[in-house]
Length: 177
Image (spheres, rainbow, N blue to C red):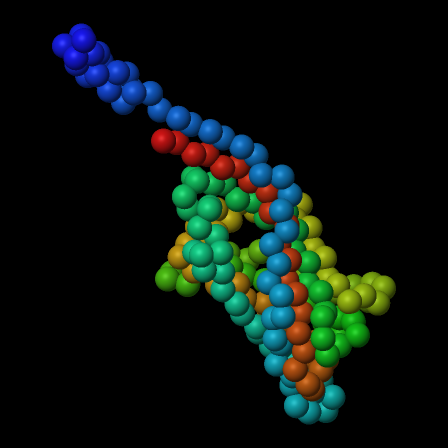
């Protein structure tokens, strides 16, 4: 019996190596939130007038490793900034700009959001900006560390305050074995 099975083993191995597994799936809307981003206060801001500050944070590959391993396509649809502590609303922000970059290659910075508050905007603790067309952030999201910078200008508070930044994403993942 052993002699009859041995010729079958190489044939099964050849068949198994010729087979490959591939799966593809759409990623529905997913919210990724960075909580507690600290924005430095501006001492004497009332006397100075409009000023600008920048806060930044990073997503490391441990947060976004799935994008790298699964040949992902990641698209950004919306950014929401929400005041969480130290300010009741974000009415004092006249303009904001959010950029993303691979921290190893800061020359390749991509502007994600450019926001200008209109005079008739209602009071709110959030700023929500939707993209007219989704932005492909695949290379940035797949980087070892993705640096996100949020620059804001206006009559800023004198004390430090915090906010949450939420990115609304969709995409596609493909896995081949």
